[in-house]
Image (cartoon, rainbow, N blue to C red):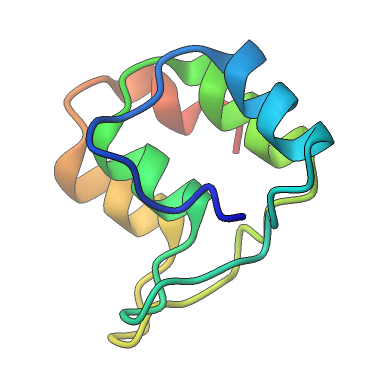
Length: 87
């Protein structure tokens, strides 16, 4: 089970916690090397989701195939500056 992709970003940190307890792999990457943390920083405007992923030991230094990390994606693509706060 992977947290990486869904049809829309999951704005509820409790759902993230439930998925992790059910066995979702926090370290999973898709074919492009995107992690759940990177996907969340790109598309999710709820800082609590980022915090939940970090508390679950999401790798803040994981790079995608282009060498991009989650913090870079947050700075480039997310319009809510508070998503960077947990870093």
